[in-house]
Image 1 (cartoon, one colour):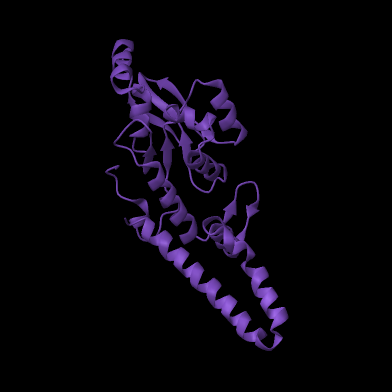
Image 2 (cartoon, rainbow, N blue to C red; image 1 turned 180 degrees about the vertical axis):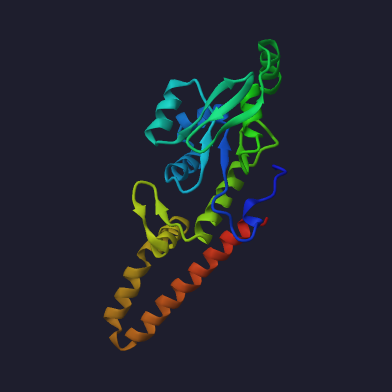
Length: 226
């Protein structure tokens, strides 16, 4: 696990945790539409948190990232130093290395020297890589992002805009417990057949919804501390 402190531990909660993604190690995930990694990309497309993707040569992957309007960075040389440029950041992150050293590093580490130096640069709170063991696990980053958005009252859906807190928890609950989708219809049927207990059934439904939402919130808070 990455040694940097969790940005959500700071008080008050920061405006946003900055994240850099080592794109080259997730090429297969992108092409095969891995659910967990695509969740990260969808969050990145909301532009609620700075999530920068390192440069990648694969044209198909470039097209996918561009279609989602993600922050795909570039490397360039300035005054014999390597720099990174994206919508979120522009700055130097390491001294320029000779080609022989770069090739040896890439052979040994399975990633380029530029990628390695960029993802460990001072510009980001968290870095994600499927190759570098010193980066933050993808699942952990998704937990952090979930808590960040909830704590700051940001409830947006991919391609749908603002969805609000109620529908956020409702959609999440329906994903976790698919049978919950039919619960309102069941309660409605009860209320039709037992009109004398309408108020009791209405209160029971509301109480159940409140308790489930509270448990969901608790589970999300706990997920960031384990």
